[in-house]
Length: 217
Image 1 (tube, rainbow, N blue to C red):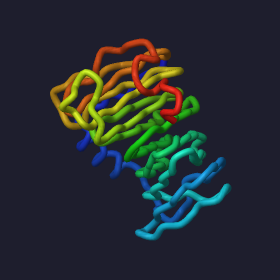
Image 2: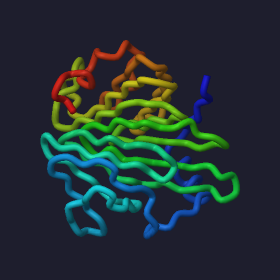
Image 3: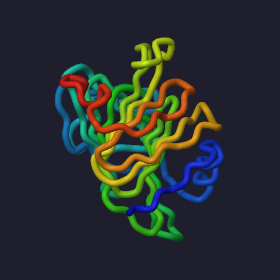
Image 4: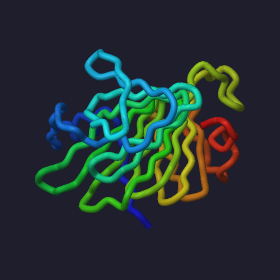
């Protein structure tokens, strides 16, 4: 079984890796490999329309309209498939020059992201962070959805929540707004929901949440 990275205190972790990994904001960290419909790129406060093969830089924000999508392939081989009405930002994709390991942090600002991560070696790590949760993996395929302004099923007063479904490998999901909440480990075929500051739900079979509803993409 693939080894999980422990996600203790997120803020402390992100501070530590920022010191351990060197990054150059102006150097492309990947490229657009597929694009359909209307997609907007925001870079340094300026908005434009990306094209296929466009370079991707750190802090780029990609936003898709309805019935639109974009796929970004990062330098380390990770594939980010952004669904319709969604927005992501590439926070970090760096190489530790000492160990040769990649560290990737993708912020899912809204909507849905399907991530395909190759088997990583020598300590490489991949994280997806939403407004209230963080997912840490090594070599897997999983889906993350972040919803705001809509009641969470079972928690009608909660208007922001994260759904995570795993297709292959193992993912650890932790709340970033409730430091006392224990993480949940998901294996292939299972999913969890993180409502507001509530701890992640116990793993349940894929298909129990909106992730599998036709048209949710």
